[in-house]
Image (cartoon, rainbow, N blue to C red; front, side, top):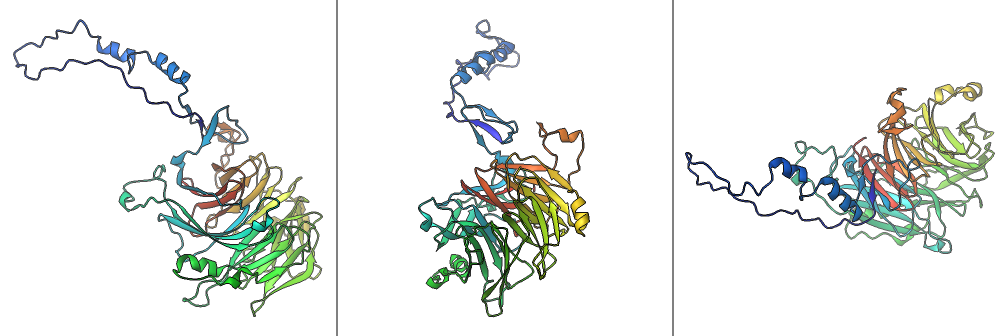
Length: 493
């Protein structure tokens, strides 16, 4: 990131210069040209030495600096390691972004999820469109203004300053630069949403859209399940009226009673819908959708954590296996069929809280954990075959780059070496674990000391809390935080 002075640019200074004689083009070849002013003009060397405005460069630069001219420092700036001087602000280096947009809702949304759409997979064209759901965090005393937001972000145009744009590959006339548009539909709530996740069931036939469900964990302890399909349909179907009855939850899970929670995950291997929820008391509950379309919660909890369950993740390839992370510093692996509801494996991953998990869908034996002390690790689950081997296992990779708590991390959906990480230092970082560590090279990355070579990109976003890769727009990331939403794609991924 570049550091930019906060002062406005001064007006450009006009260059000084007198009238210069113009040569007469009518001189005959055998005539000698005589310059009657040659004694009054400096030599070419003297003009260059005097500078562009007749003064030495040092004198002119000192005057510009004294007058408050904007000073741009293009050196690498790392939040948490470097500090801004008085009057300086951060500005993104636009040459590193293929796409960069920000949108600000009425209230902050500290959790969201991207919804798959019918616009196609692996798309790269612009302007881009993203569908998502989010839960708001209204101010204290105004809880009744909270809502679930069903969103359509359209007109996300390509940044024409991106360093990877090749005019030979793309006709600039065909690229439409538009202003981003945020369309929203709201479902009223009376409590803050701590975490929200979407689940999409397959289409029953080509004429009907896929059913999209959301599960939202409320600060009150309830978990609400909504069908947001009609809201998504209304964005692209002119004249479509959303039925008033759909704002009512399909189901309300009250098994957590008044225990607040943050852990929530839908299984990708259960098309109808299978949900895990965890709370601050350390309890985990499973909820399944019945053939009739209703939801049933097993009121016998999975127990074992000695503190709050912060994250839950279903296995991407084993239908009855899931992982949990807790503020007790452990990650545990569970068999959902266990009659005693106890974990099979427990590993101490951090001396601080284990905040977040991500299970690789490309390489299912890789699991990443993020911790409250700013570190994050990658684990090989093949070393967790038994409690004894798991207890002795070491992470495949461990990073302590961030200086504040890790709030989100997620594997790239199509690349098992790329990971996104959000932290409390207002940074979202992208990592490539395939980069080999070289002792000499690792000392300085981008001329900054102690930056791991696996670090691809640092994106500054005030109060960032959560980020997700778009599953159909490879390399595109959407994030949320105290400053609103951001959607971007870097030239690095």
